Amino acid sequence: MSRIFVFNWISVDGIFSGPNGETDWFTSDPELEAANLSALHIADTLLFGRVTFKMMEAFWPTPGAAAAYPEVAAYMNETAKHSFSTTVNSSHWPHSSFHNVLNRDTVRAIKETAKKDIVVLGSGSVSMALQELQLIDEYILLLDPQLLGRGKPFFKDVDPTALQLLEARTFPSGIVRLHYKTVHENRVKPR
Image 1: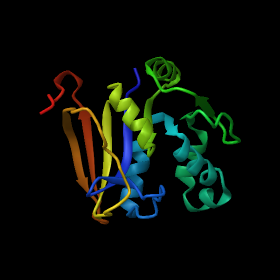
Image 2: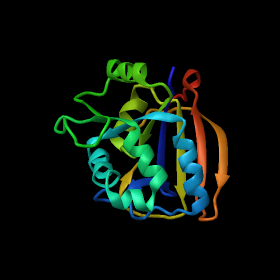
Image 3: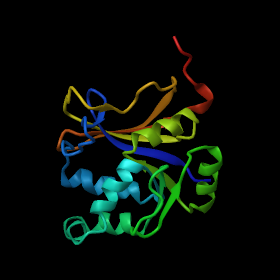
């Protein structure tokens, strides 16, 4: 069965987007971009919240995205996309589906259609809802060498959960990509 993994940039102080959802602070380099694209290709299904879906929808189907990032744009446009929202229920972006609720039944139905793994990009609210349901199998966190000081924390009010480090890789930009497996049977007990 498909695994669900979260793929997200976070600052050293745990922020994943600016106060107004800004992501223009992400650091990158060509080696990191190639590694990220390789990691994404293990998934054929994307999960988004409304805000991230609208942001991605505004960029990836455009000629500018295809010119600047041809491989990523092709992947984003051809991959199945599921957005969780009570207000957005249609899109011109191909392969987009919409769900009013995020629960075990909805996720189970999505898993039945996936042929590969499922990835959550950005979408802090979706990530936290899946974490609360104990449905996240792995985290790939791009630890950006910055202290942002303000913005939206990625891990907020989460249940204690044990993680097993699968890989740590440093890139020329200073990003450290941390790949963790969730250890469901060995949950950390609250203090």
